[in-house]
Length: 358
Image (cartoon, rainbow, N blue to C red; front, side):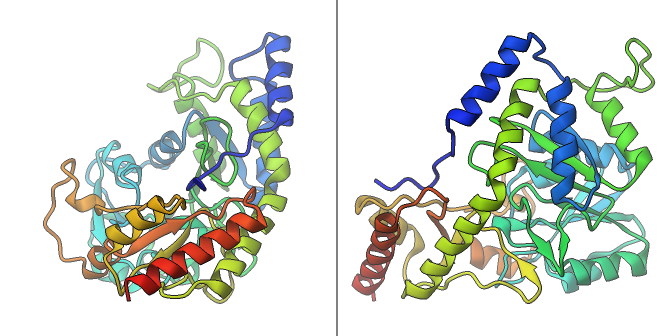
């Protein structure tokens, strides 16, 4: 079986963990500070705040930016639930809008149509590693005096017109979950250009204090450990090479797959392929996925149920593109450790299943 995902863990990561264990400083310390400083290089030098998860990054970014009860935040429904959960946990209301088909990203026209006097922010999700239409979204935000909070959990080092994701809005949020393009075991990062948002986020992650026992606000314990930061630093040093390999693997799949709709890349965008997601439009997607698994090619559906229809939200909305795409998407292996033989097997298997179902 070629797995759908394969975390990249080597001797460098193990040595980094051992180094921290030998140091005796395991909680938020010098490794976290170094990780924050080094991560700034891929987000245009922005201020970086490390946390214990990507979900914490999404949540605290909103809280630190002052989003709360009475506010509305426009979000796509085609994403992982954490996108909307982070809005709701602040007391604000997520307003779900439709996406466009090609890049699975929030539709700028739908965003503009959803703006009300209560709208505070827009939250684009750079799904699968392809950036949203940030140029159009920034123009809308500027025109209506709105904030942008980027969900960049899947898009480390992606960019639009040379500007990295995580550097377009008030804040960006990244995840270092084990299957992401780079990981720390578990963890997240807020990126921002605002000094006050940075200070507030640092206090909120650490029980509401900047200096020990001088708690200024009511906060959380959402600190990253030095163990996780040490892993993240090693992974960050390898990210550029891994990204190039993902892009090369995706190019090979784009060139050779038939019978499925391969993922395009928008002009000016850099796609980093957290997932290589095709659309199954001429066959039953679930049957297609099951047959691939039977033949040894792992795959995944991200995400089969739009957020607005999950029991946690239970909304009846008219989002036709979201509903259609949720029934078509299928993610294939694209990770950097794929061998040439495995890539060839993926192509042969997908093409054979597509042909058999034609």
